[in-house]
Length: 168
Image 1: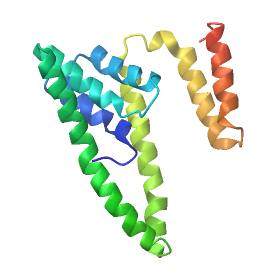
Image 2 (image 1 turned 135 degrees about the vertical axis):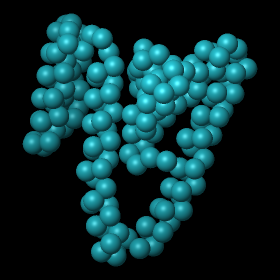
Image 3 (image 1 turned 45 degrees about the horizontal axis):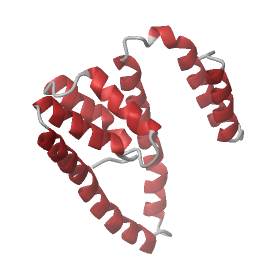
C-alpha cells in the first residue's frame, strides 16, 4: 500500500529488489522507471516492467509473464479495494473537521515520499555529477512552481526548448 501513488513505493522497491535480493541491477531498476514514465498511460507500468525484468533475469518468458501478473495484482488489488472503500467513507464524511485535517496533514507526507524517490533515482546514476545543470534547472523549476502562479506548461515548454538545443 502507498500514499501518493505507485511511484511513491520506489524507495522500498529499490531496497527490496536491488539492495536486499539483487534481483535487479540499479540500471535495470532505473530503466524500468524511465521507460514507464516516458510511455503514455499510467505510471504504475514501472511495476509491470520490474516484474518482467525479474522474470527474465530468472531465465524464461513464462517467468516474466508470471512476474508481470503477480506484481500488477499485488500493487493494484489491495490499493484499489482500499481506495474505493475509503473514498466512499470520505465522501460521506467530507464536512467533518477530522477528515479535512487528515487531507491537509497528508500533503507533506506525499511530498516527502516523492522527494525521497527523486533522491534515490538521482543518486543511483553514475552520471549524476555530470548532469548538474539538469539538477539545477529541476530545483529552479520546483522553486518557481512553489513560489509563483506560472502555469506548468510554460516550464515544460522551456524544458523542451532547452532539451531540443541540447543545453540540458
